[in-house]
Image (cartoon, rainbow, N blue to C red; front, side, top):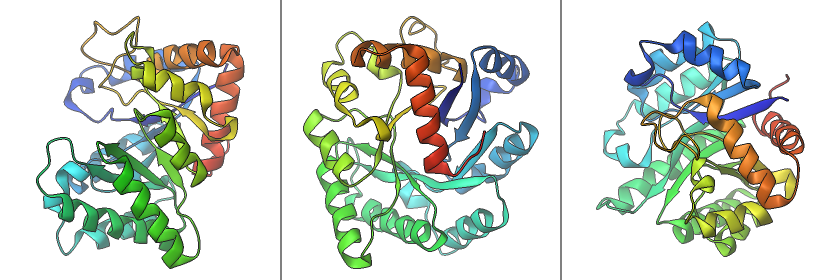
Length: 261
């Protein structure tokens, strides 16, 4: 079985003391590739170092919507430079909109669109974080398609939207990635979405160290090896085998990120 964890944050402090053991566990679980997402440019060096230390890690560069206030005149140049000079950069992000508690909606929109422009110019997919903002993200992506004449490629990561919202992004040809939340007992909406996503647009992730899946939910730190439990639950919801979901989602991830395994 080959699994592909499409969204990790293993540069966080909680992994510093035992990253080699964490790696050994993801290898034993069958995780053959990971995409390390980015929150802000201050992380670029640490993420890049991990990607070059471990051949199975690729990474993204970008600015998280909750950090939109940290965008400055040089941020775009920093993203473009690293994405252009390091072949291990396979995406821009994570970017997007998070209106859960934010009071800087317009600033987030501007930073999101700036990163969409970079992704388009570099022909790289975007990793989109979307919380309480599905309609607004959809409107921006549709506007972008109309302005540019072509859709931006990418993935809605750690997806928690309704089936209706899920279909919006599938119709925009986006991939939909499910995390450990799909294993939670009361996550009926997420489970319904996981059951209905078009097969060629389905992905899985951990978003570690957050959101440990059942049966590891009591553990404070999630890790890439646990993507198996996400695959297991998605397989159950779709009436398929774990092997089939692993094969399908790994193939989809390779296609989206331009990776050969």
